[in-house]
Image 1 (cartoon, rainbow, N blue to C red):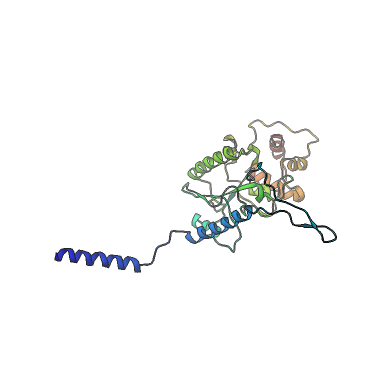
Image 2: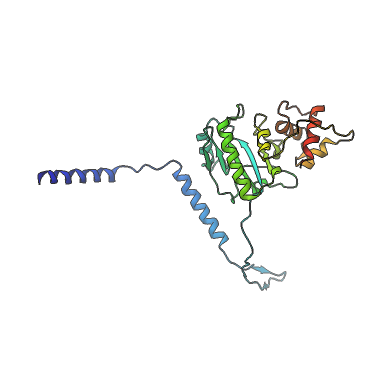
Length: 277
């Protein structure tokens, strides 16, 4: 009986200590709570069934009524924009994307060890592209998925993270039927502002897997009247700052030279690539 009493006292002590001990929150618990709060508010917005409240020029009410259509779905992403983080660790990037002040985010972050962090539902609009343009699209955030690669911008992309990236791209391409041409870099859509993912990024390998395009091994010479500025524009580049567009193109498709001048080789490469778009 004495042993049972001692056991009960021990169990009560453990219970008291456990109750008084501070609860350890999992990493990013606060950010996840904010995410859920904000997505709940978005759900509330799209659940509203309100007729249009309109008035005419004389201030009179215009009759209106809500009638729900049966033909609709979510807007789907049609582009994938690849970035490098330009930071020292994936932990630093996750911290940046879970703070309000920086006002930046991405759908996915791929770490050096290959782990993929999914940070935003694919159908929601991340803040990753900033002021950007591709073809006639001037709001790339609204039609794209942003992927950040853990890389400071001065180092090779390692095989493990590239393997994870390829798996992620394959999933996204299949899920949203994203065209091969629509896998591009931040440098491509914001040539005056951004250099990422830079000339060290393995665009050739991605193109071989069906994500973006690459030049052929044998380059056909362009015609004498070949207009490289028009070719860049037809691909999608914003040529309002032509030197910046040239640099962005060369970071993506040449990768051995970043000068804002088109050499004979650059013209051959451009002529070969732009016809794929």
